[in-house]
Amino acid sequence: MRDAHGREINYMRLSVTDRCSLRCRYCMPAAGVPLAAHADILRYEELLRVARAAVSLGIDRFKVTGGEPLVRRGIADFVRALRALPGVRQVTLTTNGLRLPAMLDELVDARLDAVNISLDTRDNAQYQAITRSAHAADEVLHAVRLCADRLPTKVNAVLLPETADQRIPLARLAEEMPVDVRFIERMPLGVTQIAYIGANEPAHMEVIRCLRAVWPDLHPVDERRGNGPARYFAAAGLRGRIGLIQAVSHAFCADCNRVRLTSTGRLKPCLCYDDGVDLRPLLRGGADDATLREAMRAAILRKPAAHCFAQQEAVTEHKSMNQIGG
Ligand code: SAM
Ligand code: SF4
Image (tube, rainbow, N blue to C red; front, top):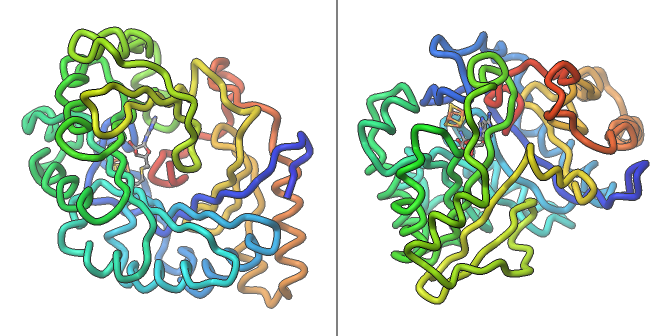
């Protein structure tokens, strides 16, 4: 369907959990955040009902996210059921990659279409510092290699001041295997809003300039790869593309095609505002499909024209990314 600003909304990010095996510094506080009660997290049947209503509104692509979606039991069966819904054209997943090697067969079998793997550094010690965990970047790299052989794969790296020397090593993944590597501007949400804002953000063209020292022919390409707002660059020596996601500095709101469902069932039209419609009371209160659909339509029609990350005081969303779904 079209929203009030004429944008075609065809993509939904479905958060299946707020739990996560990591505590990435820009996403969650060290102690974690108060987790939703299990009873408040939507059951898979409820998520599928929302997805069916979404399809009837013209949303036919879904991204399964979290928290860490692969920590939720039964996730591959959920992907299978979601992918099999009539009208669904694409189901993709975003993950920290740690459980991916163990689950890849099941997910491929469930007809998952593509995977995004988050990795901000190839340096093991730095990975531990950023994720506040004992895991190693090598575990994620192993997952990326396995996944790249089986499914379209993108690596997502949030740009952090301390990982400036990791741009070339991360971009080399696109040389070593057919994966896209995307550098994402950190968004001022949750912990980032409090602890990180004000730090010097690396400018995106600086990333491209840095990569051109190795791949001088790196050039923009006019391609849409997936459902996201990345701008892509190609070079003869790279098997995959380099992507830039400038969520803050280059507002792509005019082309925004997405809405988000939190794991507790709040349909959010925009990442930056604490606005949305709570679908859980409808799902559990006996509302019929038409009522559910109309509530979703109303939320989509409330989608604002643009985010407000550039004016911190206007941001009304104070939850962490793991609670929203990234
Ligand atoms: N756990 C999964 C993962 O890490 O891919 C899925 C959920 S995570 C919230 C989704 C994406 O949001 C990740 O790529 C993560 O790096 C990104 N993210 C989290 N906090 C962010 C922030 N403040 N700014 C930009 N991206 C952020
Ligand atoms: Fe977990 Fe993903 Fe947030 Fe990292 S970015 S803490 S992996 S939800």
